[in-house]
Amino acid sequence: MALHAVRKPFATVVLVVRDAERRIVRSLESALNQSFGNVQVVVSDCGSRDRTVAMCRSIAERDIRIDVIENGEVDYAQAFDAALEQARGDYILAMAQDDWLAPGALAALERAVKAHDLELAIMALSVDEPMGSGGHASHVLRFSVEPTTDAEAFRDEVPLFMNEGILGFVRGKLFERARIEGLGMRMGLLGSQTAFMAAYIEDVERVGAVESALYHMDPRLAGIDAEAYRMHERDHECMLQLAAAWHREHDEALMRAIHQLHMRQIIVSIERVYAQHGISSIERTERVRDIVTAPSTRETVAALGRQGRALGFMYALIARKNILGCCLSARFAQLARISRLPIGRSPFDLVACV
Image 1 (cartoon, rainbow, N blue to C red):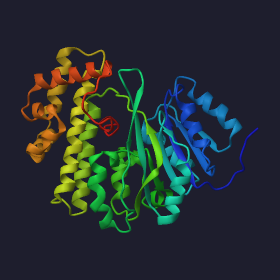
Image 2 (image 1 turned 135 degrees about the vertical axis):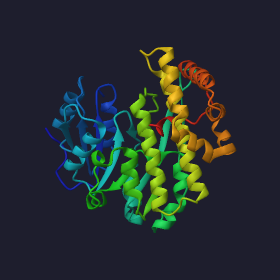
Image 3 (image 1 turned 45 degrees about the horizontal axis):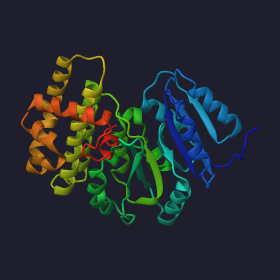
Image 4 (image 1 turned 120 degrees about the vertical axis):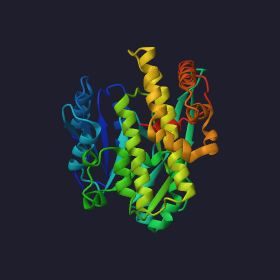
């Protein structure tokens, strides 16, 4: 028997999934079991080959707040757009299939939105990182800033958010659906999550960081191919264009944050090359060489100069075009991760480089 009466929800939680049977129940239950129940959940499947769809439909039979869309073999952007078409909530909350909401998160978001008429709410983030002892260490990122009331005030705060990379992806954000529709925004047309974020925030005014709304993120390291790295380059260019649209090309804090984020993406991309299986050492070396010598990499090195040293030992190797050194450093990082040893980098670097 279906539960809960049909009414216009405050928020629609968008879950884009593929082969998510191991964790999808946790994600769904974290949204459905909130004390605040005025929510719709849209599960948009990208061609799962496991039991993901069957599990979601089974839960949907008992809770009519869930809608399940089977899109076939499509990419994330297409599945996200399909979910937007089915959304009924006043706001859109993007989630990833391996993530989950802390209790009380939706109620905290609603309070913040109503109190400040927010167009964008940014949740606090938690990453649970495995430790060598077999346990987990929780790293929580909260922004203690006042909600902004005009565009310039928000742009002044952007370097703070940009430094942590959280403006490059949609999960853990609450968007105003009327704004998305009014701007005619579709991720498939814009090309990426970063481009979607840039389009949404270009003229936004009322933005708030909601410290009491906690979003748990999965930090697992995925592989990367040449096309994925080119996507990072396009996303970097997108942020540079956003700075130009704001006439802030000479804002030192903003430009430094943009280039620091790109360098972190470069470093993680090199490490991901070594996390891949099925490629030879020669091919790995050539892929690293392509990343290190790419024009956007060299421009970012020139922009950061000595300030880039704060990003760690790998930066110096990239700056000197030391391909062998980059390969050895990436190999060490891979071994450290397998052994669950600390490698001196924020766990948010991984989730910033999706």
